[in-house]
Amino acid sequence: MDLKEKVISGERITEEEALRLLKDEDLLTLGQLANFVRNRIHPEKEVTFVIDRNINYTNVCVCKCRFCAFYREKGAPDAYVIDKETLRKKIQETIDLGGTAILIQGGLHPDLGIEYYEELLSFIKSEFPQIHVHGFSAPEIVHISRVSGLSIEEVIRRLKEAGLGSIPGGGAEILVDRVRERIAPNKAKTKEWLEVHRTAHKLGLRTTATMMFGSLDTDEDIVEHLRVIRELQDETGGFTAFIPWSYQPDNTELGKEVKEKASGERYLRVLAVSRIYLDNFQNVQASWVTQGGKMAQVALKFGANDFGSLMIEENVVAAAGVKFRMPLSEILRLIRDAGYVPVQRDTLYRKLRRFETSAP
Image (spheres, rainbow, N blue to C red):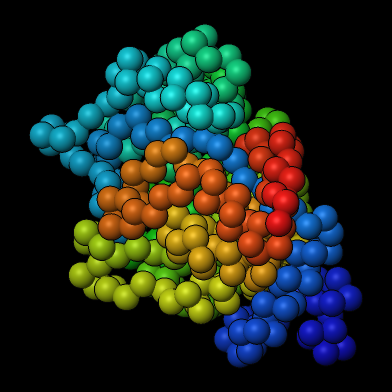
């Protein structure tokens, strides 16, 4: 059977076939195939988005990833750990703007053990019981387990009991250790990232999977990343969505070595192959934070069914020189102009509010 026919008939494609699509397929044909898959999974003409806020509880980090411009060393003049009053204000503002969740992440602080995170979560849930806490990426959880002398399972169990609602896919970058050694040598390895997500799924927490491509990775590395997350999703079914974005070089150490950003064409190609290959993922998200609104709009025809977050605040990508911002009215306009009905969702992809298309 021809590869295009295989995709259209809904048959699972292999890693070799994914690589062939990524390397050789005409871009518009690839987009059509990904859009076909997207429409089969989501026949309703809707695009979802969430209103939440990224809150970074500290910028102190021992990891020192070469692609990160956000982290500071302990003792740096602008190093911080968030105080409760600032946190309270940020969450209240999120709720006032219609937000349903916070994404809380931070650096790998050498002095913060499990008790700090339990107290942080307990404070958030006592002050704002209605807010969903999507927090602590796999490298943070691995770090907490080391600092606290606990197993990954015990850390996740305790965080969940304190109020953690789900876990983001951050820290995945490329799930190939050869690449990880060169871009983030101190970060959790592939096996550890997968263990955190497998354990979270086992304990009843949903998570997302992400991919940062375009640094020192090859086509083969991208497909390998997709392979390991598809395998884990086959095993657990615990991922809600996949979110690919491109490496941003500005203000980073790695930027001296890899100065070029992935092109829009490359972004769409990776997105489309991801949608086709990840047949067991319900949702694929467009990344307007790194690509801008227009490219994210095109992404809706290249496999994406979700527009991500209104993102009231975002600091990590912004530190690498990318400062796209978007009010709710612009998200609604971009989705409508692409031919879809915008639907606000929560972090777990439950639909909350349908914004009916405005009259012509």
